[in-house]
Image 1 (cartoon, rainbow, N blue to C red):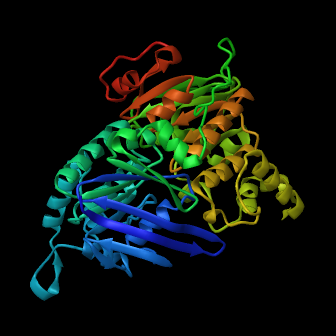
Image 2 (image 1 turned 120 degrees about the vertical axis):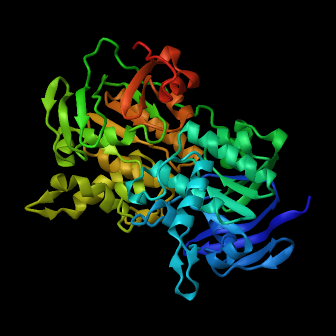
Length: 505
């Protein structure tokens, strides 16, 4: 089968880092090639070069058998190559339809070029329906949750008549249902002869849809697997050069008879559902919070930490009622949130590791309103060592770290506050398999130390692997609970889609 795209001996270096070192890759029309590897393996750099975002230092790219060198994204698009970025690339102030057609607007009126909004809206609606999105095309993107924004990115790519679509972590914010819909779209693309380069840390997805797997490690080709060779263990072995013996660590043990550490009684919040939410978490317990995208999981978490106005109900920590009117109140009470989007809400990317860890702890690092540099440095070093954050120095800019190490910095800055309750919103989003295993181990140790952990995740494998029990949300309300001894994918999805009855705790 003739290759649609060939990459030969590609090299790329950044200051102090050799991102790609002689990488080869090929993909045929109508083929799904999964490209996997740990953070820092070179996947994103390779895809950016193919899509015209970056220029290579050396090597050759052939498209339709002819050498090409794209000097811009526009040139790659003109050739039929579309990149769906992991980090969303949308104009939030514009509508969904405007984003779908951004840069290729449908116009009328000759040279005046008036926007044909009716045509754009109708075509955007059709593209959205293809991937199961029902929001009006006139909706401002800023009003959408992150999962639906990701689907808008996918809809935009589908509308560009591409011959090669690069999907970089396309399901990182999607639920199981939306993910299955996307897989159906990928099947349609294959039948239409469109090639798909698929990057994902979710190995179950890779096993489900890939025709082949190319594995990168440290900027080089680590190996390739044909369809019949694809397995979790085979991929992991090539990715990390070793076997990951225990992916989900479970050594903590919540005391069943212990009084709740964290209680939510009849909470309702502004903009939320009319039905109230209640839950309780014991010390040392990890409670998963599952549901489809748009079910209201993040909104509930934001209400609990003061980011949304609570209009009714009560929150208790260790039996004592607390009033949360702002994140500052939650911080003071030991109730902390690791947010869904670390780059937007969890980190100052241009600041150092030291500055990010120190920022929420300035009250403990200052004297007479002046930060003690020595204390800030000592705190950062403590958590860099404790969490095994891979960084050349604590003065390293956080934006230059891998996704897994960025996430550890977010954990470190909050753990330094010694929380009693920790809410984790998609804690492994965009994190590679090795770092995921480390984060699962960290969450397990936190629970073993007596923290109450509420973990929101769209990754069912993750929810099933680490939770003591799972609460499931549907359309803004808690639809039911699944205890550990009955915890399986079917039980969770029945509640998430309102097809099942709540399980008894």
